[in-house]
Length: 445
Image (tube, rainbow, N blue to C red; front, side, top):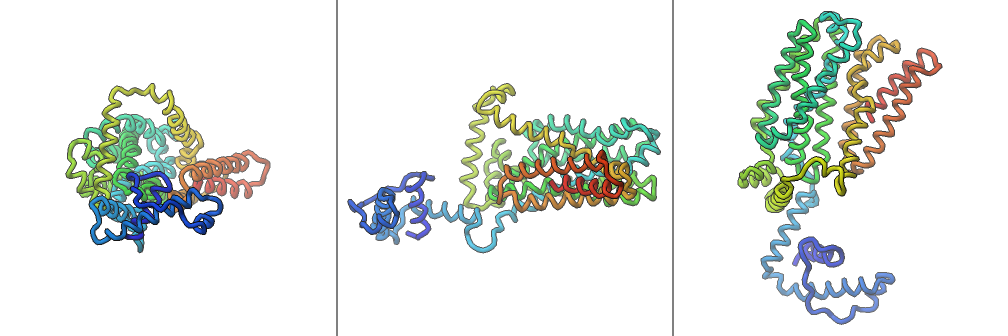
């Protein structure tokens, strides 16, 4: 019997059993006194551990003929160690899933691009389409795609259940591309609003679909880190739109080219998802069990196939017994607390003002006297990207709760600086500096 198997079995007896109790054989009635003393006042624990050692000492004579159960246990432990990065060497368990996650995160790149694409050129768009000096229409053109995103998020669940994640992502790219083309060719406010609304439909589906897909193809240990690619993709799209938007200061028609460029990531996503794997959980749900096993083996390792299938079965069984469930059950225990916390996090994130910072940072900087608002907004995008990389490093090390608390505290301090910079009795230079500092702190938080 290997030392690894011995330690694993010992742990199951001294703590909670993971895969069943380990039988104890041929115990001595009492452990040596000095062995008990070594545990500093824990004779019961010492006795238990001594009994286990004696038991396994007896089992060693069978080491050349291990039982089937023992071989299965050894295989299970080795598989767990390998999948969790304890097999020695570099932990590359994320590598097999990374290309598929990266392809899906292209949808978040589009999300970020459409957030920032109107940031700088909105003045020239308003001038050309005839709504210059009308803040309500300016705000509507920039943010109407959020209304489309609301509808898209509602229908996303049906699309995923019927089509699967891979096919749903490809179909979802159609309104994204058509909306960008319509916006680029717009000559009236109505055409621009319709194009932005279509873009929002696609964005709404993506915001639900991509995190689900990434979580279902990623190994458990690396799920948090790979999940941050959603935010990283959004940040890169925002940076790209702000960077490409700099020439709009010299070319009042450059905004059309920016919207034409938005079509390219959509085509890339359609082609890329053709080579990506489908969610193994969805494949199991629709009865394609062998395909699900193949994908799990390819992405997570052969040792994880049976474990994953058992998990899929248990989830499907629970789903099947809750066919009559309704939304009102979220208001009662044990679901109410979780639903309230999750809902409040999403709501507070929106009310905290991040949309205003990302959509209108150029106008905000212009209002406080910063002439080169496009470059200042680009700096905001780069800072936001740095924050995403920081969270990538900390996600699986510090946990979600600490990051959330720190993030909201940082945003609160940042917004206080912004308000003081705009309303406080300070000189213009300090106003500029505090405005940029507060916005950058907010972005990284």
